[in-house]
Image (cartoon, rainbow, N blue to C red; front, side, top):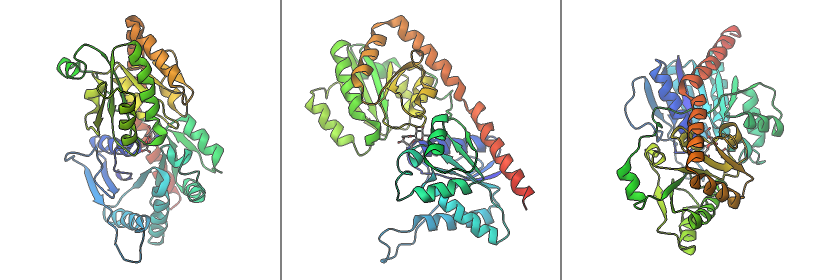
Length: 379
Ligand code: GMT
């Protein structure tokens, strides 16, 4: 199949997932065309069957905001025609699903039928998409897609609860390359971070407010008082400066390491003992899954799709949003009980097996096939 993939090219979960999906599909022999404003962050090297098409925008003094959707839709039309795409898969509804609808209509006028698959990733529904500035367009473009997927049951339910949805939504969970996240002990690295054999707690995110990095630091402060430990913070974003200031304020700068954006998160997870994810919104929690695949139990909030991945009392513990004291308490319980910690590590690893590429990629392929069949039937 010739598949166009539209996504955000950044380190955010939706972009990472879209890129990994494109790579996996290309490895299975499909031809994949990424259409986005920048090369996706996870697309570091040359891959057979993968093409990247940059969406440029025409700057003009009249435009305070260059019309990206128009440029994106035009680029989709051009690529669909010249590369003879079979299907376009857009990740994150805003503005990708609306641009895809526009492209589809333009192509229809030219006698080309291009099915659109839209994957909802989370904040496009739970936060940004709910805003009156976007909601009508989000609802319309979901209903006009040929297939819609959501990354958890919870996100599917929230979409149906918040919008008037007239089409079926398939749940296709996030996946990861389990081999890549297989734990590889690296004692030298571990010693650099924790020279006295302290426990290592980690957190990865894009440091947006909804990730509640402050709760990570507050929980760590409590854990540190009871158990010798270090905190590794991976990622960067709007909250980073405030979080650095908080570490200085509580006097834990030497125990909390800000690693910034990292390409090889798996190396950090490989030396971690616990992972904290106290988010306010999380449709799935790709970062939690990556940790679990590296045998790291997860202490998280209980919102959105997280409980579908992190199982209470088995792979980790879940709390109400903001309950950093509860999170700290169970973290200490695990760190002080080596047998219990080992049991949770194994459970986390076992649970992560459900989200393999081998399980999830065929689900997307089946959806593409279904759309193609139905599009042919309607021609
Ligand atoms: O979580 C983020 O900040 C990034 C965001 C995105 O849209 O790029 O991630 C969302 O998509 C991921 C992949 O499907 C999910 O695993 C994340 O849970 C989801 N984030 C939120 O719902 C906040």
